[in-house]
Length: 188
Image 1: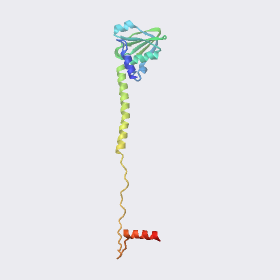
Image 2: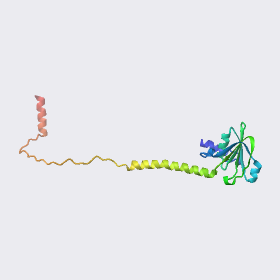
Image 3: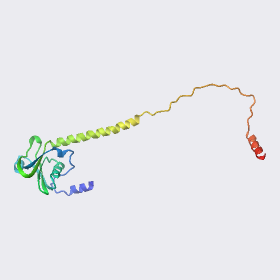
Image 4: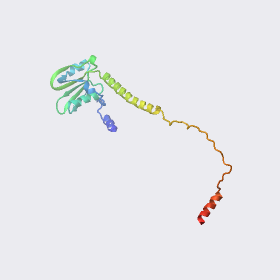
């Protein structure tokens, strides 16, 4: 799969904006207005930058395309099938360079947050969640390693002293006697 994506990236038209995975929550950061079109000439005069035009199947695909294109913060979708999706960089929210006008069959989407800040905040949240999760792994390993090993109690049985008297003569059987007993029990 990765090789296919790399190959598709290599086949992209020269000068076309590079695509990347959609940042988490990017599509939620657009203010979308129906029947609105960009005033292209006025916006470019103010410093807005046209980035790309692509045919897409619907508005959601246009939003994803903008999210996947670095520096894209405005999309214009022409509502037809297939529709045209125009991508723009209109600058930061505190120095916005695009102007709009009402126009039927066009939808405009403007990113309502500073894209770089939103992406950085998203990465920080993801990193924080990852750290919390890996922290559980470290705690688990520490608990397993530091868990005290239970040993059976080592108590010695009480010591008792007994004394026995030895008998003066004890008879001990020898190997020869066992052979004799075995031989005699076989013959009887």
